[in-house]
Length: 263
Image (cartoon, rainbow, N blue to C red; front, top):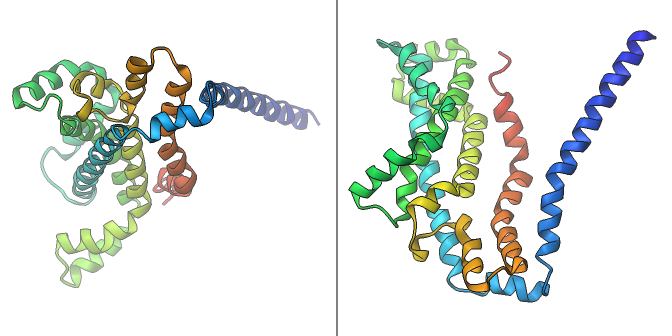
């Protein structure tokens, strides 16, 4: 009976904490939605979606996100396979050095990144964001996909080798298909990180034609003053792809994050 009461108390505390966290998360979202109706729903959203210049922001973000995903997935899948199944000198130290990148805040690299991009002449070019995004996404993606590859039985690898398959064939025909849950998770997180990035575009991009969606509200701050209705409508427009990704890809996130945890 005592244990039942303790268990009930523990579940109640957890549920209360979850409810409080849910309220704290939903409050700014609900407030943003309500603000987007101030001054007229049609007026605010038409200012966002009927402005031809706005679509340039979305296009820039789509291009950057696509390149981030392509380069990040290529790098982390190849590296994860190498660290998981190949044997070479300094394998463990190199892996630890790459993983240490997860512990260093991205803001610490802004000055060297900006100086490098300036020397390359990529200021006011959306592609200047790709390098920092990929570098920042590799540690998490490498750790997740390598953990998944480690969970694939080595007997499959050995059987394919006996059948005459090369390492490239084994990687392409076995590890990539089996690793799709983890790869999908890294793809989703790479997209979300790229789409939501605000600090780097704010520093690297000054020309409105090169800006990404996170800088879109600034357009209405400048031209509409403190019209929070239009600003909130712009924020809602930015958030729509994020909501869609979470809604349709939630099961991939769950599978990918738990993949490899149980062998």
